[in-house]
Length: 377
Image (tube, rainbow, N blue to C red; front, side, top):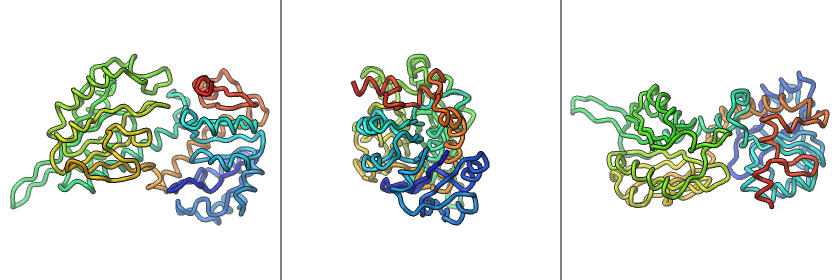
């Protein structure tokens, strides 16, 4: 099987889908690996590093796409790239198919086997492939660094000859992977943290990191689906959440929001009225901005000030940490590739397998994922 690792064309994308570490393992497993020239340069990986790992360097983007049996991607293929991809090839990466229906149609038309790793089920045997968890970890870390940089005060308590400075108070909404990493990073910097989540089971994890926990008073069963992802809820449900959060917001210096629903707009949890009630000079980091944001005042790709509050809506935060982001992401892709390599080569994917049936979007000219199929219909 010939594996292709292209240079990402999406704007401001600095990650790469393979590193010398993972390329070396692919080669040892008998795969032929081709890497586009300069594919890893933004992650500080040189072409020569890939050559030493056993890859060949391809100078043409179109040739790499057209000669590859299995294409590894960081971002979904651009619509203009699809005609260049070899027919019947496989594509592995995050496709966000419910937001990329035209891309899905084009992949189906070319009989491409497309796996969307953003739809991996949250089960134990898929953990090593979980790109969302790996990237959310980095986003949670970077969100705190951004907040600390834009907050006009320090995070830790500090006792000096001039008196004591009280620690900053931080609210983290959502105790998933990103939220837990945000809590841990905030605690390392000395901030005081209150975390909110709909799942009672999250309380133990939050408290183990030294933060206080506030339940948003919904049951675990109704707040997430069978795959372990959050489900869309009623307007009344979110209004109740807003009311609970609002009680604590007046004392907050920083709010970090992480609430996402796959394939749906992010729920509004911080209203304009709540922003107005924050301390002057506070900061909101909206990690849900790529799906519309948890605060309607946040602007995608921008840092803005409204009502004397700094709102950070920067997108693709993992790409701002390209060295470690590429290392983690490439390992996730390698784990998935190893899982599907033989059935792919044999053209015999097991559509009853939980991992494959959740991630497989197009196969043999058909739409496989039921949610995507329904959206197209």
